[in-house]
Image 1 (spheres, rainbow over the protein chains, first blue to last red):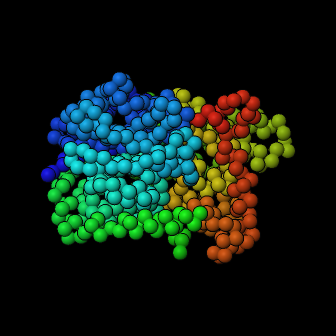
Image 2 (cartoon, chains in turn yellow, blue):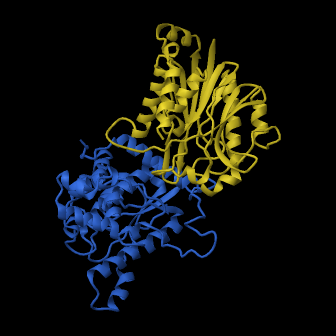
Length: 283
Length: 275
C-alpha cells in the first residue's frame, strides 16, 4: 500500500486565523490536485506561534459548527488533514493542538504535552499542557501525532510506538538558532538527528512538518522531512521558504524492515514497566 | 573544547538576515529602508544586506558628517554607495549641533558625541518619512552587550539585522559580501572626535572581547570559568561589569505598575501582531 503524503511548509499571519485558513484551503487544493492522501500542516498553523495574549482570541473547536473547522472538515472528504490550532476545552483551558480530520470527521486531537518554558520559549505561561499520548486508527493504519517539544523527549514517541503507531506525524514551529560554521543551524541539525533516530529505532515512518517565516526576530527554518522504517531520508524540504513537500510512503516497507530487524517484536515492555515502577517508587 | 573562532556559515547567515529585513519591512506594507552610512563597517554591512533584501533602488543611504568628521569616513561611505548603486544623500549636521555646543563652552567630548549621535537619529528618522522607508539598525552584539552606544542615538532603529552578530562575525560576513576592503580593514571608530577608536576607548580589542563574550553569554560560562579558560581576571571583571551596568540601554524604560494590566508586564503581544 502506498500513501501519498504532503507536508505543507507554510508561513502564517500571527493571530489572523481567517487569512491562515485561506492559505490552508489553497494548499489543500494544490495537494488534492496532486492526488495527496494525507496533508500535514505545522504546529499552530491556523494561528501563528508567539501568540502570548492573543491565545484566547484565536482558539477554535474542531467541530462542524465552528466557522473555521467547518471548512476544514468539509475539505477532509477529499484527503486526510492534520492542522495546528489553539484548542479550548469546556472549562476554558487552552492547548496547543493538532487535529486529524478524515472523511468529514474529527478522528483525533493531540494536545501538546511538553510546553517549553525556558530560553526563548514561554509556552507554559500561556497554555495548559496535554495529558495523554495515544495512537489512533486511520485508513492508512495506526498513527500518532506529536508537536515539537513533545519529540525532544524520548518517551512520547516510544509510547506511540508501543500503542501501535507505525506512522509518526510530527509538526513544529521551530525557531532557528545556533548559527556557526556548519552547513545547517544547530536547531535544524538536532531535529533531523532525532527524527531520523526515531525512524531507525522504532522501525517506523517519521514525518515532520515545520513552518517558515519570521515573527519579530524569530525565524522558522522549514526543512520538512520524511524518514522510512530503515531511517533513510525519503524527502527533505527546502530551508527558509514556503513549500509543499510531496513524498510517498511505501507502507510495505514496514513489513520488510521488521522482518529483517525485529526491534518491535523483541521490545521488553514488561521489563520497562517493572523497572519504571521500581525507579518511580523510590520517590 | 569550545570553538572560539566564532566562525559562521556566511551564506546561511546572509539568507536569514536578508529574509528578516524583507519580512519585517514588507509585512507592515512598506518596501523601502533608510540607513545612516557612517563610512564604518557595521552600517556598510547593514546597507549591503538591505540592498540584497529589498533591491538597491529601495535603500536610501544617508551620510551625516560633522565638520570634524574624517574625510575617510565620507570617502568610504561613497565607495559603498557607488559599489551598491543605492540612492544617497549627504546632510551635514554641523549647523544643527553647533548652536547647542555654543551654549556651554565647557562641554565634554562625551556630551558632544552624544548630541551628534542623537542629531543623526533625528535626521535619519526624518529621512525615513521622506523616503517612506524604515530605519535599519547597525548595532552589533558586541557593542550592545558592552553598552557602547548612545541611547536614543545610534542605537535607535526600526529593525536591527546585526544585533546577534559579534563584531568579528560582522567582519566575516562583510568579507563574504565583498564590502570594500578599506572599510573592513580600518580600525573601528564612532568618529565623534579626531583620533577616536572603539578599541582605544574600550581598552581591549574586539577579537579578544568577542571570545570572552561568546563564553559568558552564548556558552553560559561563569566569570570564574572564563578565567579558568585563560582570560585575565581583570578583563573578565571589567567586561562582566559593563554587561550588567548597561542593561538599561538594552531595554524599554520600565513602566511603574499600578493597574491590573500594564504594558510590558502583562500586556504581551509581538510587534508582528496581526501580520
